[in-house]
Image (cartoon, rainbow, N blue to C red; front, side, top):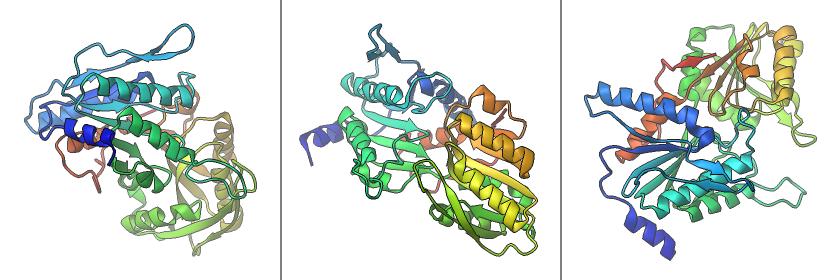
Length: 361
């Protein structure tokens, strides 16, 4: 154990403060404020004291472009939960700008006496760079970002549906809580429970295990697509393996929509080759790109894509919120519950997501 790790352990409180401090950089402010409201509701239902502490918009830029973080109140001894949206299509700030603001904020809370700093990053950027592309000379950038976060002083990380389980290894002794979307998706599609004409589809082999749990929860069949990428950010589906006899409705789950290529390849094959008549899509992270907007609109118009369910792990642009077939589910409730569990030293693993989620759009 390094001297820095020993010092951080010595600073951690054996008993947390009565109230956590929920803080946010600018891009994380919208979700953080919703979490504060949900946290207050949790406290009131349990008869506990409310008035959760919140500190928002703590980062800014100087005229030369440098990022600075300024804490407007004393944080000494506080149990801090720092929210940031690393990918923010609304503000125009880049992933790198938002990540740097997050790292500087972690360091600010650490230098000014916070007893523990838990980062809450609903969408964990750089997680897809968890290994070099085959036959290419690339670094493992996900590990670099973990190293930077630990060096800044991060004590714990909470994320929504991380791209890979390797993230736990990258952060070493720093706990990583990856919240699963399965309970949310199961509740959203509960109306299809037990129907013989419904099949749940994983768009690639990486989603095969979650899709099996999802299908079992709803008592429906499951199938897995065989996907490969001929070039970066391009997808081809060669086959969808499963029993499609008498199936007319497909429920497709994916962790992310970037360009929408995987969704397009899966949906068109379901319609053209499997004779599916209705398709419902649920995605943990929608990056709100123009390519995805165009593809989803075309699939809705021409390929029986009835509904797309996304979360606010990424702030959703006005163009996507205007789509009549898109629904946005807020993650305020699961993150509020995660904050409460971490603050009171309770396990987050296997945490249930409240079925009645707040809905927007």
